[in-house]
Image (tube, rainbow, N blue to C red; front, side, top):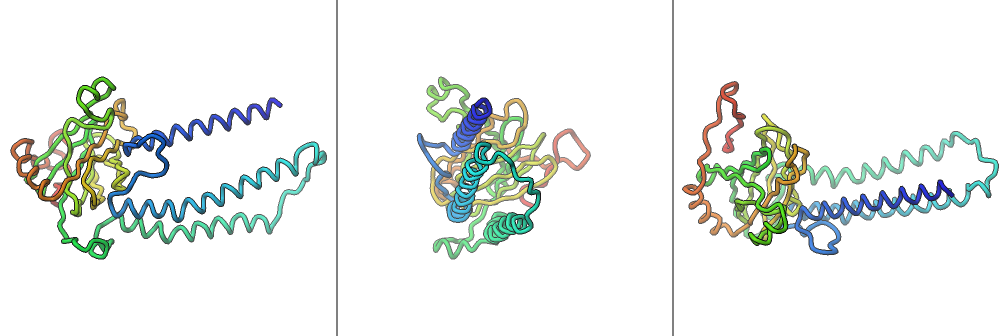
Length: 302
């Protein structure tokens, strides 16, 4: 009886942690009450990721979960102590071992094709036929360089005047959020503008420790590594405000590194960028390797 109680408590604890994890993940995409599933995608990559999750992973995981549940129930009933006072001493079953190795291997092989195709697409926009998806696609591209700091984000716009913006958390408490009229733990003091219907090449690095720029609505999640330049891309379909977080433990204020992107039409973005050149700091040239105390990073235009 005591063992059953302990098992029940362990199961409830696992369920509670799982629900807590789900709620935390949903918060990063500005969830609504009782929301289920992933956030609504607004880029082709996020849409493909959602399709892979819903059409491939979930059906397979559901079948596996139900099968394992039935198997556990059968084992508990068939081999309980009262019905099986003399336990079997069987140690090997060749057929069973082949089956439980072969079937999972086949499942992984089947999943490899769509997953590798999607992974290949996330590397470069040239790997995706955007012209086929969007009749009005004109090939317009810009580059945005994102640098992680403890504990804020720096954004550089090399193709739009080469200026930089530092975005820090705007409101940590409910009182601050209500006073400012922003989302608590999500909004930043500087709103970062991205254009819609434009290929945005995202370059990532860090000035201190590992960070991770994660925005579920865009389907982008990339580490920022000191001394290294990582790349991703996005193509935003709908104007709006989108939120994310740093998803790599980076120190005491890791939980207070939000991402707030405002997607606007291209004409509005160009108007904003023209004014931002005079409003924000210009990007200084990187120091030569081994000189100075600041991190020397590859210029965004390269």
